[in-house]
Length: 400
Image (tube, rainbow, N blue to C red; front, side, top):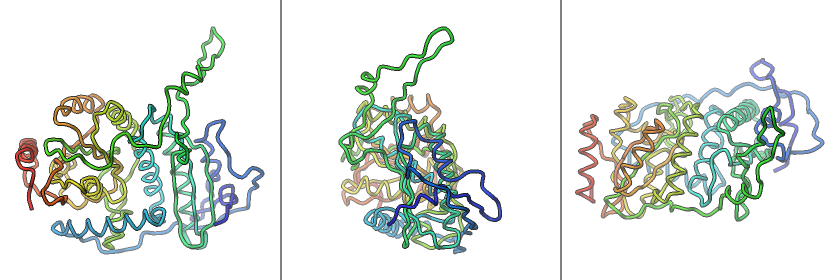
């Protein structure tokens, strides 16, 4: 692959409309003053003319009784993508795919050792891109725009960005800066303090360096502890509805007629991130998984691969008024699945309610066969949800 800054600094005309800014111009808005601007000595390389890529039509049908089959296919695709260095970019939904990649990377930092907040995290952005196909460069432009908007609104920052030619595929990566070292690069949340009657004073950089840090090691494991009385709590980090467009489920089944989730609530993401990070630092989280690629059920299956679990999403269905269980299980809404002690449930409840964060107890780890299965409950009222959870405490085997 070859570095190519011209794609970053070119003007773009997409669907006959001249875009207001270059990709680099938009991304620079997310960088700190000491960040590394790519390709010093760059020059504008003319104009890129392209058109947007329409979604490929496909069959929308899926069967709720085939959940286990879907799960195997999605997990297989996810593992292949991980082995290949990441998922191929969905050119027909660049905004969704970009925001999902950013959200997933930021959520992954939650599980690290250290003391930090979301506004301290810095990301590096890299696009490996096949420029030859119709719609490819339009998708890159909209990906850069979505990245700029979302990272800025989340209060995070870019440390660097780059574009490389790739004749085989299109991929976008957003990684915490400095992951190759023992500690990741963070930005201080403290800024110069100014007042009309006094001079600006810089914060104590030594104190900031001592208090703000992020290690590459996890503080909480990614595999569930075998405690059938503990709770599995699902917390979506966005308020969007469940859709299967652009998902691994769509890729695995060919069901390409659904829209993509609209990930557009950065303020809610920030609230979720800060509360969950406090839980992690305080040792309340026994184990945790990032809900992203593949959705909730694959995350639960991977997290509980050693213990098994019975997952009940009736509470989610009632809250969203969503009758399609498959959408709930496989929609790629960024979020977390955490395991907590039963004794911490009241505290977790109070902290999440205090911040108006929706959360859903979805089950307990622990099945003799080690499998993760979905419990289909017809009771979606509050009493039914509580009854379902209580039954899980008295039976570690769940349902077949």
